[in-house]
Image (cartoon, rainbow over all chains, first blue to last red; front, top):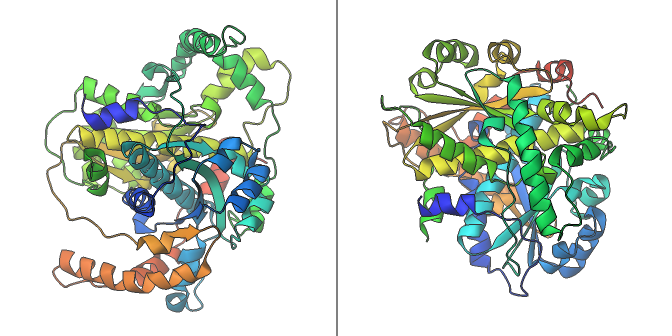
Amino acid sequence: MNDTLSLLMNHRSIRKYLDKPVSEEQLRAVVAAGQMASTSSNVQAYSIIAVTDQEKKRRLAGLAGNQAYIIECPVFLVWCADLYRLKKSTEAHSGDKETYEDSTENFIVATVDAALAAQNAAIAAESLGLGIVYIGGVRNSIADFSEALELPDLVYPVFGMCLGYPDQDPGLRPRLPVEAVLHRDSYNPGAIEEVRSYDQVSADYLSKRTAGKNSTPWSELMAKRLAEPVRLHMKDFLNRKGFMKR
Amino acid sequence: MNDTLSLLMNHRSIRKYLDKPVSEEQLRAVVAAGQMASTSSNVQAYSIIAVTDQEKKRRLAGLAGNQAYIIECPVFLVWCADLYRLKKSTEAHSGDKETYEDSTENFIVATVDAALAAQNAAIAAESLGLGIVYIGGVRNSIADFSEALELPDLVYPVFGMCLGYPDQDPGLRPRLPVEAVLHRDSYNPGAIEEVRSYDQVSADYLSKRTAGKNSTPWSELMAKRLAEPVRLHMKDFLNRKGFMKR
């Protein structure tokens, strides 16, 4: 196994950070590596807000689920899908022509672009000895969160990412067996059977991490999650911001 | 610069492949590395269809834009957002409870999950000496494409990915300056000015790659792209598949 593969296979989300700054050079290296990810037709339809101001981090944490690690990490990155830059920087060429920044297709392009860049950045950060954790909570109160960052129309925060030196070494979380997610030549509905063995594996893992207090199998945890009316404001919010009107 | 960072900074999309197979061991290593990417609340809401059957690759290529490299690469991976597995494997626990697999929020979760896993897989592949290119064309005729792969409801192909040994060494494509995409503490609309210098850089790059035949600046290329009524079927298709109903 080469060093890169070994790095990828040893990813853990870090939720406790040392009180040690991330340098400007490191931040730029992480973002530059993110930018080298593939992007649909070179649109590069994303922006990153690096939040280091302590007061602002506190405010954003309050809107995103109050995780202490958003406040404690030296840099909080907010990864945004951004069709605003595309729209604005092409206006001089577009004239009166109809444009399609409001299509569901372009919403997907921008969201995927942001995710590919972020994952490259995450790997770059880990290769530099830094740790990260993704924060979906930026979508909890997404309107207020967007306002706090002064995001214009056609920009939305897809997720956040804490960045800093790890102050913990959590265990590796087991994933579904490869057979559950990898299909051959067409979709195999029978792959779902693989979840059974994973229920046992993930229950054992959870039991170990909670000193026996919790051993809920994955499918039961997921059933609870799927029954939660989470972030049902997303459709309206995105429409209001100019996304997915058609 | 460490080896991983150097790998990330040297990414090129590969559109010509050697006639040399990717081993089962390599394929599994690539997928396993993909699975170690972060996933929202551990939902792992994606599936990968590895297409190696030559007839099927030919058929899929015909539906995705007829790129020769889809047929020539030894393995064509189709990365799908998959809420079907989540729904099916939790039914026994859910009983009569309302569930939210049809929310825009869960559509975003599944799409982002697929993208993060795919980018990890891309890095893993490149670390093994393989090359990749993302294929957005899977969304060109997405209904027929999905049918060819027998994708059930709540599964959609986000993008494809060719995988194989490179038979070319294309130049590095320059990206927007870091200042254009990286904002500090809040969104800076002035960052758009950075596009001007990039217009020159990307025009020079294009001119070099086309032996002077094409030197269209980025913002002009993007204006053309934004004025194309591309894949306007996406919204209806996704709704029909059970996604984003609310």
